[in-house]
Image (cartoon, rainbow, N blue to C red; front, side):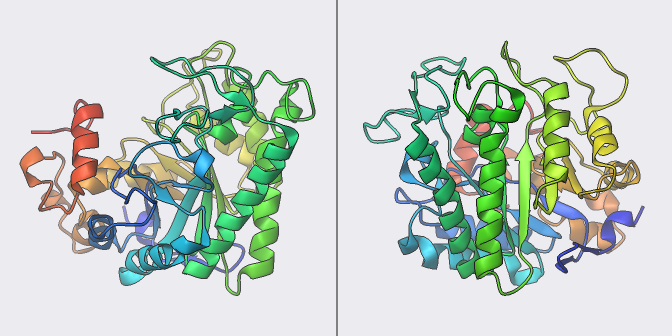
Length: 369
């Protein structure tokens, strides 16, 4: 039952105090210009102490902004904001990981202040009011790769312990990998290997920046969604090819994005083996894996590590119970909170913008009472 309390040392030397990760969660609470707010700092300060905290996603350029209230790592002027955020997360020993992305077609011209969204191809997302994006040119793709590198340099200068590339949840890196959103016929599309090129190019650029600027161990993670509901779309067989490519790349860890940690595939050939188990089989311990998905109790977390995961990530569990780790370490798991009273969110230091986002979009899954 205490396997998740043990430290972990990455191959680059960075040691994590325990195996609990705070999953990246949208706060929608940053300033209009991408600077962090005091509400967000209180939110992260309250939850510091877990092994790693992965931030809400930050855009790497203005064209990649996905929603209002989004954190940004797109300009050097944001370095004081990022520095304050990293320092706050690390107050009680957590390692601070900045998640970075471009939203691609998962935004709109209103959020982009009149600019058209961009993606791999001019194919709209399958959702209400989705705008048709502009297909990115080769020069724009090259600039995007460079922008990921520049955002990583800012994360290093700000004192973060790593960056996580957000290649999940239908955002731009996933859009280039997906046969639904990528209908290109050049070097960046077509075959699965060509659709892998942008994620791998971003990984290589970020790796080079880390080697150049980091003066201490600095992590490079990659998050991905194993399946898409669209047809054509990413299927588990595609993802297992991605996993093998990531295992051979410079990334330090992989991070799956799933609502249920050990569910089977739903869009691929039926299999009794859970998705994460199949991923672990392909990985063969070449890289650590962060598993997330409704892991609420110490028993569930412990069993997740026993099945082969290196870390267990929690999202909504740490929203409603910021002291999850502290209570378990003190030997009082019976005191853990498993429901969230909507009237207690201020007391839990959940930002008001995030409260509105949660009650509007996730009321059914947050265990409100």
